[in-house]
Length: 617
Ligand code: ADP
Image 1 (cartoon, helix red, strand yellow):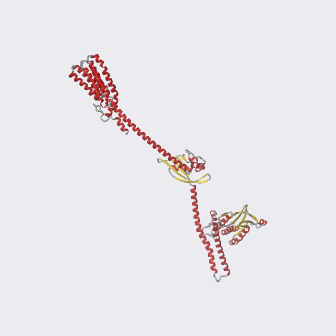
Image 2 (cartoon, rainbow, N blue to C red):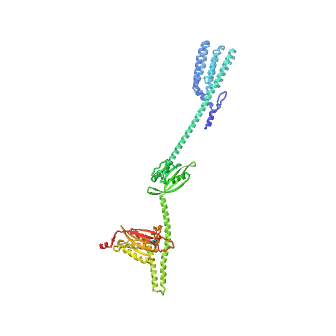
Image 3 (cartoon, rainbow, N blue to C red):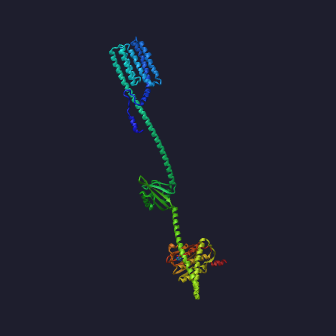
């Protein structure tokens, strides 16, 4: 029931029959029940009192009318008092509640009749008429007879008196009239009093009932309210548990992740930070951050501006990612930062930031880029190598086939024949060199090359190389010099003579090939535990960017198709592989247009001078 219904009910007017005073609806029977329950004690007390008074007034009979006293006493004690006693006894029966008004009215009338009877013995004598006034008084006001019944009975008594006084007993009109004045007045006063008393008790009843209804209503409302409060409380507890569970999950996620996570407000003050971020920040900047601190205050001057701008961007409601390289301890770490604005009711109130370590991914990416570059390079090399090779093989082949054909000429002079045969031999050698190089590099790569250590006179070896290349150098107008040669005390070591020879001849061959004018120096120096060899030329030189690469197979400084020099790009990679096999290192210093110095060192396990060897034997 709503508040309005409740208000209507409270202000509802009591309606009743103006004469009978009955309620028009079912509450009448409730009223009667209540009225009975509320009255029954008073009724019994009144009946007893009436009986006592009726008895006590017997004294008056002896005093006033000793001659009628016997009759009056009989009237009192054998009629009226027994009748009232009977009603008193009946009041203890259940049925009494149904007929009590009728019985009490009857008692009222009987009481009245008793007095009337007594008055008629001496009708002109006024004393006993006062008794009837008392009867009216108690009938209307005392024994709880309801207005309607009391009025009926009251007027009936008056009617009976008048009938008796006028027709049966000889009474003077003055007495009748004066009595009627009193009796009618008593009846009227009694009626009014009874009317308003009953009306009052009906009003009380009505109000009480309304109050009861309201009480029930309020109790119901209270119950509903309590139920609602209880339901809401359960709901709130459930929501709280749910939120707590979510919060627990979120913090487990936030604290369990490898990412640094932090959030700031619009003043760059830290709202939240997880342990990972705290520790990482400490490692990088040596500061343990805490909630409430202004994050940019703790950044070094060099990067503060950058970070202020990043936070400004995100606080302008921009979502973005940034990758940074940072030194964490000794390690170069790649971090990816994600910035997300925190928006509440359409307004940016802060930002959440994430820092993921992407070093592993970044290195893999860089590796992929390198691998791709390598793949492209090797593809390019392969093409260059194929073009180069076909040229390198075709040139001597053409020489061989061409001059072999010319040899068939019948009129060929002996000189010409020799010349052609020499060219065929030269071309054959060139082809053989290429094939040897290819075979060597294949063997090296297949791990099939083995060392053959033997006693080696380094001076003899250098001498041999010098004299071998001297004609070729001279034919190009170049000088070739052998430096630091102490013929008296030659260096003798245990090494793979053939590999050392191959290394040096490759370097000298290149020096001659890539030098147009000037000289080539060949030297060997003892340097502590190592023996260092130098091949210096005044040739075209090698640009710095190519200096590393030329040691790789098929790599040439000039890979253009219009290059001037023959060669398969294998010589240096074979040389380096052999140097490594001898546990040495090869180096290059070169300047384009000025010349190059190739040097390599090999460790000497046992170095013996000639005289020592002689002494040994
Ligand atoms: P190639 O058969 O091409 O000579 P190498 O492996 O011997 O193959 O040399 C690789 C490249 O290194 C050459 O193509 C050349 O560009 C460069 N190079 C080698 N030695 C010299 C040098 N002394 N002066 C200038 N460039 C050189």
